[in-house]
Length: 208
Image 1 (cartoon, rainbow, N blue to C red):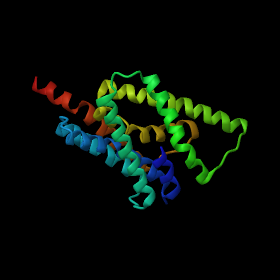
Image 2: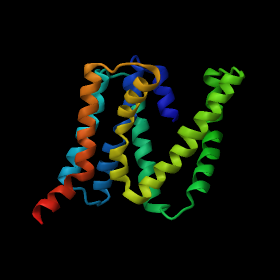
Image 3: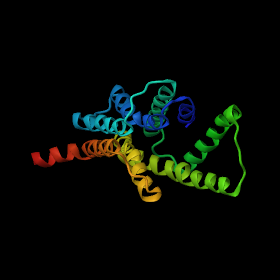
Image 4: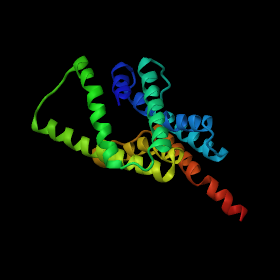
């Protein structure tokens, strides 16, 4: 999260920086292979295709310090995911997320002084509570539950659906119509996720 927020400050393209956090599935794939995990060719192609889709959907390939920080965020996310899968798969998810939130607060609080902004209005405090409960607390519990049940590669592959979901929610809630490039990229991402999740099963089914 630190890498993500720093990347949004230093990049010239905030949308690309946000999406590049989702290089995480690629790093999970590469680290998993380096550690000896069995990764099929179809699953590898699916993850790569999914990432290509989210890059297309942004419609930019600008390279600057902000985007590099975003990629660093994807790498740190992948390392944490693999560590959880290998060392903490039987841990209590609520306790784990509570400890993560506490530790994160201790680490991030000094960075707040870099660009301190706080407007204690009712709407701002309500937004902070809602985001904390949904994106942070509930989101991470569901994420680590998925990692526990599906494994880091499968769970990582599905995370590329986040940019796609963002376009859908932007349209349904805000009335923002996605561009042709965003729609194309979202479609490619969906194909990649489907291939990574179901490609091996379809091959086995046809063989039988």
